[in-house]
Image (tube, rainbow, N blue to C red; front, side, top):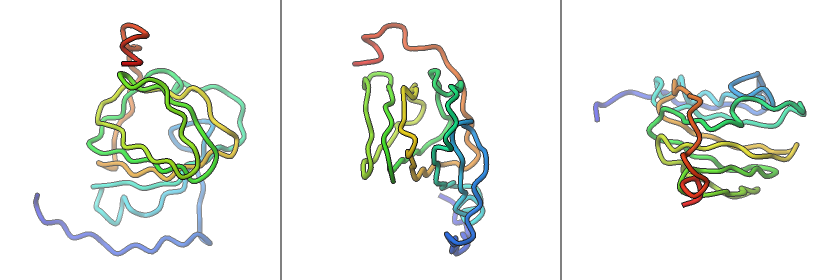
Amino acid sequence: MAAKTWDFVHNLASDANWTPGLREIFEYRDLGIKDGTKGDFVAHLIRHNGKKMKDEVQQWHVHDCTFQFVLVMNGWATFEYEGQGRHTIRKGDAILQTPGIKHREIACSEDFEVLEIVSPANFATRIVEAPSSRAEAAQ
């Protein structure tokens, strides 16, 4: 791996800036890691914003990334993963999503909040076809 100089980052909670992002029902706090790692990683807190609408990420989708880690800071959410079935993640639980795994959110609590770390920072999210059978989704 080519050597790249990363910057030291101290992201202050007192200066937190919560913004809309990928999900309409969530707001995001960028932790400065994208700039600090020159785009190698992004780290953000994601929390439910109280909206009651469904959004398209509840459809089957994939993230075009090489690394995705999620740590639940508060609340719970239920996801379905291709080949893995349904998993409910709760406060303190962690998920390492394999690259390109099809998944969808089923439901989440109104106090749901996670720390998510992804590489590369500018990953894409694509809506995809559901697994061909229920059995394939739950293998």
